[in-house]
Image (cartoon, one colour):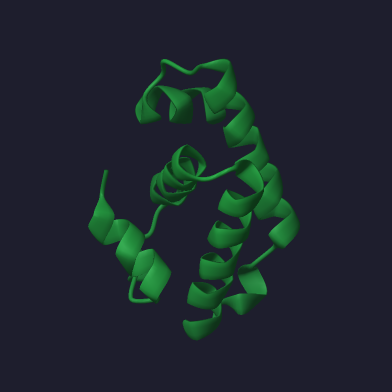
Amino acid sequence: MNPELIAAFEDGTLNLRGFDHKQHVYIAWVYLNQLPRKLAIEKYCTHLKSLLDSNGYGWKYSREITENYINKLDVLMKENPLSGFDEVVEKLNS
């Protein structure tokens, strides 16, 4: 687990220039491992919107797209309970 990444995402100090797709998915994966799906989605969406708004990228945020992606990730995680993060990401991106 990368607690520094999670903390920076949650407190809004994350540098968006280095925030790639895999890091997006990693945070959602951590939330889904810690929380029920609906709460994970809510937490992720709240922090992502705040982070994007505070950096002038609020127009890029789509709750619908974010929820759909996290739901897809959740299904893959449940279908592959013994898979680690990298394996789930590979399935998600294929």
